[in-house]
Amino acid sequence: MKFLHDTIQNLLDKAVSSGDEIGCQVAVFANGKLIVDAVAGTIDRERKHHVNSHTLFPVFSAGKGIATTAFLRLVERGLIHPDQKVREIWPEFACNGKEETTVRHILRHRSGVCIRTPYDFIEQIADWDIMCKRVAAAKPVFPPGSATRYQTINYTWLLCELAQRVTGKPFAQIVNEEVFVPAGMNDMFFGVPDSERSRITEAIRGSNLPTAPDPLPCWDYSLETIMNNRVIQQACLPGFNCMTTAIDLAKHYSLLLDSEKNNRLLKRETIREACKMTLAPDDPKPEPSENWTTFGFGYKASRPDADAVGQEFGHGGYGGSIGIASQKNNLAYGFTCNLMNGGAQMRQTLSELFESI
Image (cartoon, rainbow, N blue to C red; front, side, top):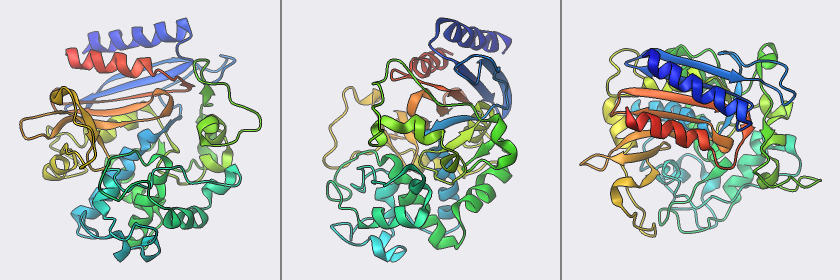
């Protein structure tokens, strides 16, 4: 495994040297053991302070997979069912054409509530009640269930408000009890406490992204500014504000693999159901079918087996971060970065590397 570690370390060092990355981490687990812990670069654009294995990176939507795991543990205990109507749990949601929306529609990104919820100022995004009311009042872009369209930041409130209502607990407590504690993950946060803020790296906008206008008008142009805001960093917004290390990102997925015998986070049958690759009625048919990618239950699934169950699953984040589990190789890996790249080249490079193993 030293060869794999050296290969990945060399990839990171070259990326930092060329300017394709500023600071980054890669961690790999195989059969439940950490076999790669590679870091490179710095936490700041001035390149003064070096990254280490405990540096906290913003991974944006890569955190959706962790929120999904916490939610599916509630499903396993019978607190909520995928085919349950959302209105049974969240009555205010049943309006403007969303009356027949199911939990399954939300998990598969088929609710139609996919346009980013507006806010009046950045800190308001952390006001759970206000944002939930706006999501509940939204009009879907298409009839729920008829198509697949990524729910972006709305996944925060669509999924996690349901979890809060069926448990009576705040989602920060839910994810801590359901994932962080059982997995032994001490370096992942949906809301970074004051004691850990010194470990956070800055989210830096890449030169290959459009220049952000001044003033910043909307989500499309201000994700770095939003994530670097202290109020956002310290809120629980699981659709986009996860702060973590590559080690904890990879560890989470390692505990979902079929090969994992100890400390599993979810049952094997739950993962198979969560990774079933299906199309909504209006989804375009994939060509070729063996290479398509779609949403299962919260995770993005690809490389289907003979039963159309994705053998690779996980979630990527804005700028390039990603967490992946590969059933084929019995390994899981995580990549974190602080330079937000439009092309996410390292994500593709790592995918090709692990596919070749």
